[in-house]
Length: 344
Image (cartoon, rainbow, N blue to C red; front, side, top):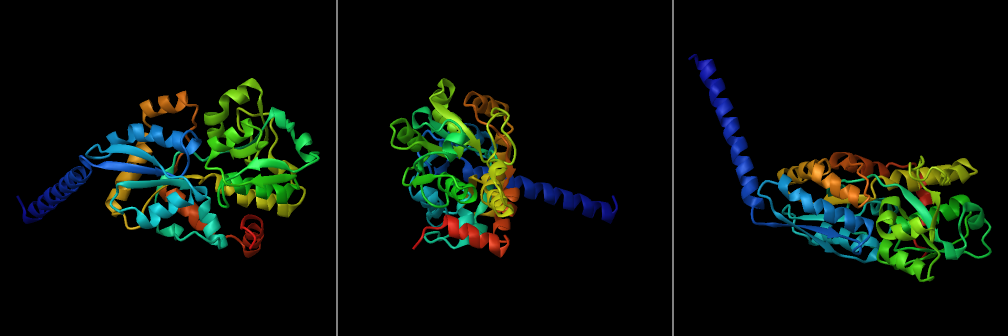
């Protein structure tokens, strides 16, 4: 064998050995460990349901097959879970935060209480680029857009805190379309707002169609709850006769607010991230396992049973999208800041 052939064979053997050692190290790390999903929403809502089904199947795609548990950490519009993932969770590859990615826009708008740098998170991915709707109880009397525009009083919509879609979508609609809205903040998540609407404490909610189906299906199917508006660039197949918010916008500025503040942010709402400083090899393990889970046949069966859609975004795509928020035109940023940030 020539010296060149011998050298080539040695390099191949070395590379194979390094790969085997790396895989072995990964398996050794995760074997017997517990991977914790920290969900910044209450049990029963869309964030919680998606994560529990993902957790049921993702372990088999991680070397060492760790146990996966789900921890609900509610409060401050999912900001507590985001800040916990950023600064308190051990960056060892055993924590994944599940919180509303739209909070990253709030960070660039200059909101207080957001202590993290969005670009330092290790973004894992998004299981579904969510679509959003506004729905009301039949008892509220808001059964169509004519009723909403013509309401004699501000319509009570349940919210959480600035930076969440439950808050930001109604506030943008109020400014862009002139809809009469009274936002009631402080609820922990979609399921809690739904309970408030059922009790008559609130009239309705603007939330993800995926989450609404998970927590309010019976009322919608029975006609006791009515979806009156979609806040998406195009219609949801299941709601062909429900109008789009942007079609009611009468000015270019109103359309721009809806496009940037609602459409562009909706896609990254259900964001999964690991703490800053998580080893890059473990980030890649989590990204690959996350992506593989969303294609898993058993996962897809469970998702279908729960009526959950799957329209994923990779960790790399998620990171690029969030980076784009800090590059918005100054005039758009200024208007969004005026609408979305709490008045001092």
